[in-house]
Length: 361
Image 1: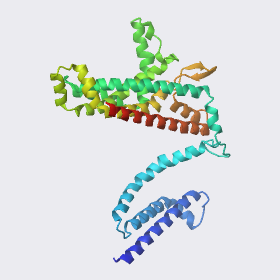
Image 2: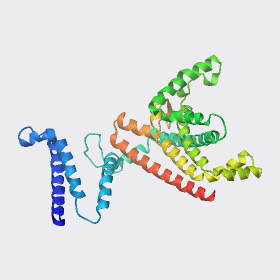
Image 3: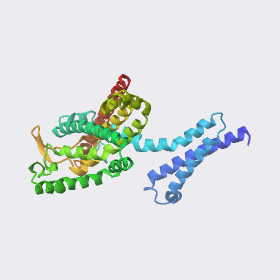
Image 4: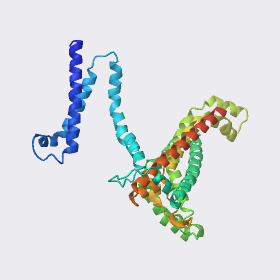
């Protein structure tokens, strides 16, 4: 096939593909009004028409004669992932930002109200408390997960017997879903711990931790640390195994004890893993939802700024309840936008200072 024929066929396939795709999409939007006639008969095969249109378009672009053929092929292979990302993340995010400036109720949109949604929740005691609770939870959980994970990684990379079994055992909690894990630990806190405490006459643990407004958040921290430390441990294990044994042995021959070898040799050489692990735990803690929902569902209640609020309702759960419990969709979208901006700023600052610390170490 010569150049002109190939170009003609390519353009024809592309044009036909685009027309068929647009036509099939139009039928999909109008199918309720198409009750009779030729167009009505095409409603049942609109999915096939969309697929055929996409195939024709791809073939048309693929056969187009050009010196940048490899670039076109790379774009075509990348296109499904880009479309999936756009449909599930990018487009919903843009729409969410738009809806946050309207009076959208989840179904209809009547007015564009600007920053009114953003003004309201900043005055809300429940939102302020959720922000404070999230901040406390993030700091404590981030510290505990990384400290415990580093300790476990040092344990399983030592010469202790059965270290591979320990690695698997410490990692297994991360494989359990957050909702399932939350309900299991809810049972443990409410019944197992309290019954053991009553039997052993330990008054401090005789009342469930989940029933105490000021201490219930520590239950979520305990479970989150137990679940996530094994995952972070594996990152530290990989980093520690990359430390040259000759350097450690040389420090040992120079008289450095175990603690000095860890603080002066191992920790500086795995500094880049701290950046990764702190980033992961920071993001995971800040957007914690499933454990919060399953263990406490935001409760128990307490008074804050003269109003009854949920004591363990973190920001992600607060946004969820604003949307699906209180039916304030537009306000929930505004909270989600602010949540995204806060998370982005905190994450970028953490990575910046961690990278700076790596250079110093």
